[in-house]
Image (cartoon, rainbow, N blue to C red; front, side, top):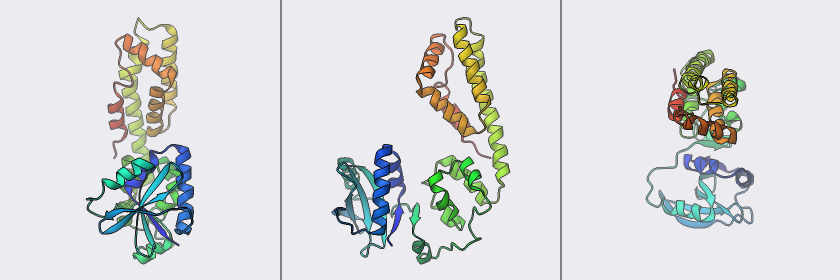
Length: 279
């Protein structure tokens, strides 16, 4: 079975695809991993990358993957996936790239064995952490098994460019011996600090402003109640993102700006900086 190695550039390009395209890419590479010689893949040689040949592979009519493979197809680096022209443009720009693609994910236990990485039961780095706690820290559901397969610090560090900065930082604390309760307590402190900041900067001034009608003030009170019910920092940040996107939120921001008041938009960068503080 072929081992697929995902570079950070592949992960970034994959996450920017629309959902329907991600599903196509996922299905394609599951089949590709089992048999890289499937008819219809249409390998197309592009250029040399660190002495190895780059190829494009056909996902469907619209999308192409860019890969780098060894001679016997035992290890294939996935470098990029994008619309046809954009994928080729990305590949063309990498002719002078130095260094191997950043190794992020490994599919297939043979890769670990061949590279001396131990995956024996009981030796995994996050064995004492439940799935619930990993999800609480922001690990994506689809990456739980991969995170659980990590056996040592060196292997863990290869995931740095894959995970969001704050998620990696939380896992790093656990990897070096911090207890999950330490992180929960820290999250609680930041959550309360974040709520106080939003409440004082945006919400409370609205409630005492003479130019806002009672309907708008009731909307503000609803916002306060909803924020108070958020149990994690991530939930608060997601709530702010949603408020910035949805129609009702935009109407409220327009009303606040008309009154010369601070809005979520005005303090968004401060919210994110505060949210991503660690212990």
